[in-house]
Length: 376
Figure 1 (cartoon, helix red, strand yellow):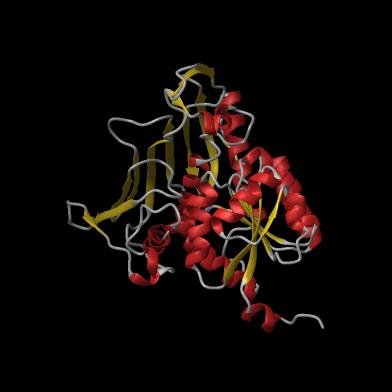
Figure 2 (cartoon, helix red, strand yellow):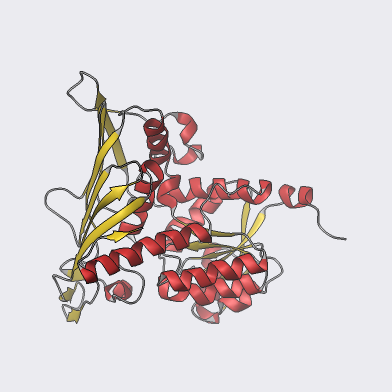
C-alpha cells in the first residue's frame, strides 16, 4: 500500500549522513546534535570514506546502517533525506547519487565548486522532482531573522550603506593538515566561498541583492606553515577578499575578509540608515556558526544599546542560551526544513538559491580578474 502524506508526517524523516566520521568533524559537531534536538528526525544511515570507517562511525553514534559510499547510502530504503556534509569538491558526486535515487537532499554550503556545477545539480534535482536544500544556515540564525524584520519595519529608516570587516580564521599564517583542502583556490572550500558566502547571503537576505560589484582578491601568504609538523606548504586560495558595490534600493556595501585572525576586529557589520544605525559584532567571520551581538541606536540616541532577540525567533528552545554552539543555527534550519518537507513550503533556500549565490561568487572572481565593476 502506498504511503500517504499523513503517514509521512507522523513518522520521523529518516536521515542518511554523508561525511559522518568517528574521529569527529563538522557532521559530528553540528549535524548530529542539531538533528537530535529537533523532534521529527531519525538518523538511520551514514556513509564514510570506506566501509570500515563508516562502521566505526556507526558504532560510535549508534547509527544502524553504514555504507562505504554515498551511492550505496542513497539506495538505502530506510533513508528519506540525504545530508551531504563533506568538503565542497566532493559535493557533486554525493548529491547526484541522492538525486538519482530519488531522495530529498540537504547539501552543505558551498553547494559546488562553481556556478556551472551548481546549475547542473539544481537542474538534476528539478528534473527528478526531489526537494533539494542548501546549507546557508546563517540566515536561519535567530538574530539574523530578527535583524531582517527590524530592517523591514523601517527601524533605521532608509538604509544608506553597510560595511562588513571580518576574519576568516583559516587562510592565515598557519594551516591544519586535516583541512589542507581549504588552501586550494580551485577546490571550492575557500574563504571567498565559505565565510564570505555565508555572510553575504545573510546580508542580502536583510538588505537586498547586489546590483553591481567591484572586487580585489589577493593571496598575500602563498606559503604557510603546518601548525603540527612545522612544514611549509603552498596556498593558492586568496586570503584577502575586498568587495564593494551597490544593493537593491541604492545602499552602498563594502565587505572585507582577511585570512586568519586580527588582534583588533574579527567581525563587525554596520548598517547605517537615515534614522538609525545597527551594529552586529562577533568573535570571527563565520556568521553561520559564530555567536554575535546586535546593538542599535536611532533618533536622538547616540549610544548603541543591545537589542535582545525575542523568544519567538528561537525555534529550538534547547539552544536559546547556547549561541556559540556550532549546532545552534543548524537546529533552527532543520526545524524550518522539516516544515518545508511536511507542508511543501519553500522557506529554507533550495538549490536554485544556491546557484544565485554561486553566480555572485563568480562575479566577484570576474570583477577582481578584470579590474572592472560588474553589473548583476
